[in-house]
Image (cartoon, rainbow, N blue to C red):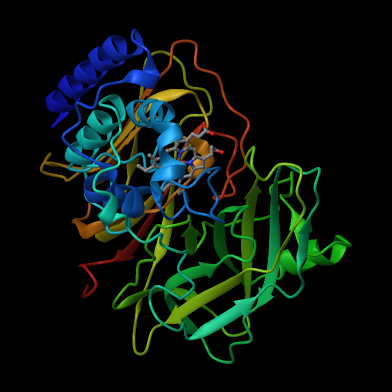
Length: 411
Ligand code: HEC
């Protein structure tokens, strides 16, 4: 897989050199693949959750007319592993809620973009898809809306804001899945959902005259990792037999990252997003989270650190946050007998797209296991200012690893 990718890269580089030395307007069609028959399904499924009219990305890729002016840029973003924004390598860990572009899809896009980007048969123009308006998992048990609309004024380019949504639940419950219906889809770049039992978010909200509150600089909130992380197009995952505790009457807190592109810059938006919570019907094992952190200062080319795990656990997902310039991060679980389980390999980590990676199969670890983390830093790597979903900014590399105690939950 890896060797193949490098081969592909070299091939693509060669193509770039050959083609760009000619006149772009007269690129002869040498691609075996065309848009209508071959590329459209890839763009629709891998890019279309964002690159669609009204979506979060600056241009649509789901019609030929809107996609073809971008062929050069598409090739660069794909070769740079910046698009699609899912940085986990498939095979080193497998995930339920997303995957990297397959080598075959990548191959087809590169050949099409450098081989004259043909449209294909005119009688096979695919119908332009629309942004889905329904909840992917069906109607949620509890739907909570932001109490007031929030205005993102024309002059603001990027902003993080928290909103308190009282759950109104009378009994203790367990959250098995979380989803979001963004209000202003063109600017809701990502979101996270927290459970607050201590009333901290309410106090912060009360102290701020506008709806919600800003990222508190003193780290007053969040004090625990989120129960839900949302990015356009990433499938929400529903747990079976396991859930995040939602004590009666607790507050649900929605964190929205608003971000404009050069298309939406200068426009004002109003957002009133909705959170969907799916609750367990019967008993559910409580999902807990362990915070794994690097040393406060890291330097050199390669940085390694470990985290000992207490007791027998089953790992369900991981949220990595990397705010130091680096090219890769690897996470492995190590059992007491020394056997290693690959869990996550992030390439070109991008703090702008913090995701939760749900393991395809939960990872059961006996007592005495540990996690080994290795990061490859850029030469002279510097910290990048960032905010944290995990309430932790003192150290440059941190992971929230979600688990249930004991053997795997029925899944
Ligand atoms: C989760 C949303 C999302 C997905 C999925 C996604 N993109 Fe993007 N893309 C963006 C956003 C947002 C930008 C604007 C740059 C930024 O603000 O980060 C962008 C920028 C780009 C650009 C550069 C545009 C420019 O302004 O120069 C290209 C090219 C691109 N994407 C191609 C793709 C391709 C090809 C795919 C699928 C294989 C894809 N993207 C999948 C959100 C997405």
